Length: 88
Image 1 (tube, one colour):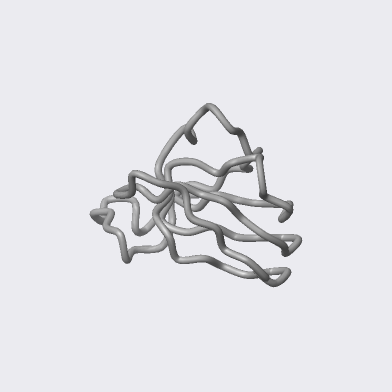
Image 2 (image 1 turned 90 degrees about the vertical axis):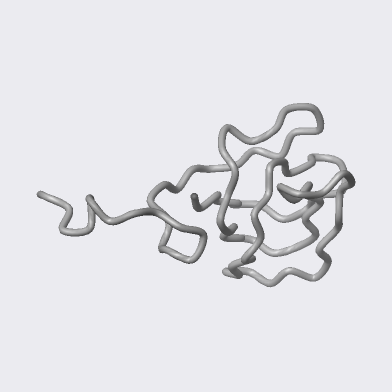
């Protein structure tokens, strides 16, 4: 099926073109920067934002939440949320 928006330019505020499962990792960065995250099972998320030099912790994230954050890494240490999907 042809994508009627396939020739549209991408931007930070445009809907995501890619979705990928995220396995939290203490060493490796994500395969691509995200525009947002979908959290299937809530909890705590420790992440490194694209423009940050330090990790930040989001607590009490609810099941089925979307976090509008451009991130480059999700850390395993401290992350209790699951079913995390990167949107890029």
